[in-house]
Image 1 (tube, rainbow, N blue to C red):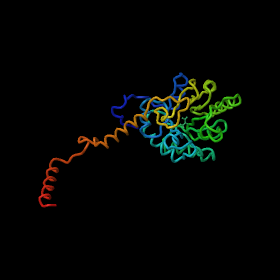
Image 2 (cartoon, protein in one colour):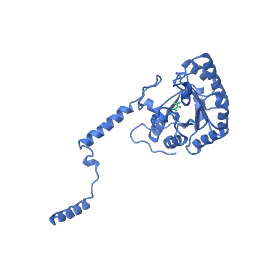
Image 3 (cartoon, rainbow, N blue to C red):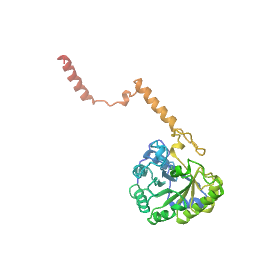
Image 4 (cartoon, protein in one colour):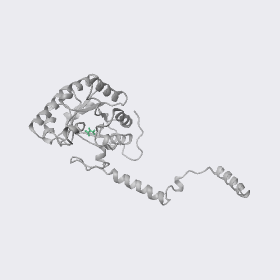
Length: 301
Ligand code: KIV
């Protein structure tokens, strides 16, 4: 795919194409893996051009883009709509997409069909789904259909109603044992990577040391093989108080507010648009028009 660079905004660098194999190589040489979410063409282009290794079209788009309270209501068609836009903006990063709630929990055949839609219609390279041991048969079937899978354990937002809120998981011994079992079972099933969300760093470190698949943490401490954050959190485009693990690396809200207020002020004061921002008639058309108008004025019309 050839994309024209964004003129003058960013230093253009060439980054190698990232594949699922690259992730494993990065784990082996202890090179931290970077992952950000993206939900549309411009953010996908910028994140890709910044050299981020993995771009995830997360179902967090339900909150970040669509203003929903949680991820549960987002549909396959809504996800695909965003995946297609992101695909057009991503050139080198590995592209992952979240299977939304309801697209894989009910029927395994439907789940494989839905996973294949992400690949066929959306150009996704890896599909991600939530859950540990209980999802292992499904994960094997999807991998059998030649579709790489990313696992996601710990705080799994699609289980918010079962968990009774967004709570850190794996704090008691039994829960830690279950997490370790989940991780090793998914690793043996062949997941390309494993997202660890909202778990103590000590547990994430144990999982990371135990399995061969790269672990990608969010609220799971620094020992994971990689880190993921939601794009809107990173650039301060969210309206709720941030979680403990969020670090703002920029302030898009302030930038957008300043731009919108500047536009408003200049329109209200008639400073925008200026003459040099307006189109003009060609000189001969202008002369002809002046003649017509003068004749009309002379005739009293
Ligand atoms: O939906 C999402 O954004 C995720 C995270 C891992 C960030 O699943």
